[in-house]
Amino acid sequence: MSDANWGWSDRLKLQYAPMDETHQEFVILCAALSEDNPATFIARLDALIAHSVEHFEQENQWMNSHSFPPAGCHMTEHDAVLQVMREVRRRIVEAGELDLAPRLAEELPLWFEHHVDTMDNMLARFMTSEAASLATQPA
Ligand SMILES: [Fe+2]
Ligand SMILES: [Fe+2]
Image (tube, rainbow, N blue to C red; front, side, top):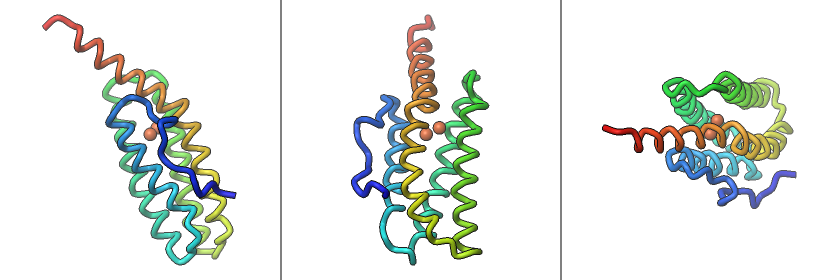
């Protein structure tokens, strides 16, 4: 069962504003997947995929430009979840497997919470410590 009450909360904040803002958008679009309206599911999934492409690209760019050590592992998680979203979309559209919709709506919040707690948390800490060290360097 998907949690209809799942949404943004302080529990997901990483104290890095650009990332927290993007994550609030992800949570809104992801929570919308649990609406019980099969006729609009693909449109809602497409909105989440479009957001995720930009969201992940932004984080990938931060990792590349700051030589973030575990970048490969983090990017692999982004690619994997996008692949799952696209595969679910394909199977619903091409094979009518609508039972995958509530399963995706149930699994994605769990994936996101784990990703935020691990990969994004490390990146946010890295970005804030980089910013702090730049601020204390002599001009
Ligand atoms: Fe993220
Ligand atoms: Fe990420």
